[in-house]
Length: 457
Ligand code: PFF
Ligand code: NA
Image (cartoon, rainbow, N blue to C red; front, top):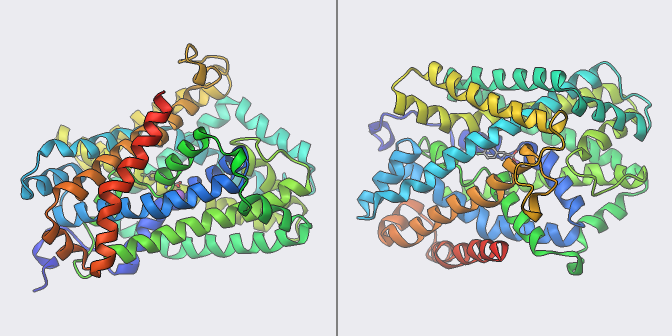
């Protein structure tokens, strides 16, 4: 009997299935919606370099640490953290990292679902040919009209959340594996098609230059904080998700290789999204720093001019919706597990309760886009003077809660887990193991703390 079959947890059917599920969580709106607009707002190349460094030096090592805790503990994230801590004679309070994560997942899903709803409404707009042959102003007007209508936003937010609750209430393994196996490659291919078309705009070189030629004079500390936060957000870190998925991972799989695989896939999708979007931004004289609306204006515009545009646009937004769906599922999962355990109710009951609570908070985000558009909760602080609830939730989770939770996990695995047992589980070469452990022990904590401290001052 293999060691795996001794545990009560089911296992992924293959190493690839784990990678795809983790990639299904990682690849989402963070790559296609958030990465391009943040890059645009922060001036391009220098931001991208810092972001890539954060992924390689902080993101991948922390993902490995989270997967390690899950696989070693073989329980839900909070219980796994406690168990691994006890095994290593450490304080069970380390599980705070998983608790912060569950809270952050709840807050993120509330607005993630609103943006997921935008994607769903765009499936309908593109299917009906609303973007065909339109100019930038007309496409921009469709987007503004969406943001201005609480009823329509509420409808799509509800549809998205219902889709998420549906899958989570049924248990995430069966459907999820099958779905990501088809959807991830399809999304990837379609992005390649759009990038291919983007090379014909005459502004492809300019975009390469924008994305990859760093101008460090444009880099602010605020941008560094954002790059770090985006690295956590995009790789689904600091939220105990990789612990949960890791608990289903077979003992024979190399955690290091799996994490690098997920990191590469996630990064490729983000960069492809950038290369798909910016040529159309420049070709149409649009504003690279226009913010969250970027892909909802530039891509429809591009598709509207492209041969077979209605077909490709519809397909694209369907895939974006699926990418958001698999990420949304992974966000509701930890909250549901937690509610299920704390309140001792069924999984379906827990998924509905957690999902409806999230949905309610999402309604506040929707109203912040229109009815409450001039209500600023923390308006007394200079930084938040023009920030509504949606941006506030986004800011606090990505820039504070996720890095904090990730920091605790890195400190715990780097300093508290006995070296021998850690090395036995990781099965890496001595050199790579030492490098990884030192990244967790020194580099990650110092980097995260430095950015925090800077930001507090
Ligand atoms: N990683 C997802 C994205 O980039 O869209 C978002 C996300 C999913 C963040 C799950 C966090 C998470 F736990
Ligand atoms: Na991502």
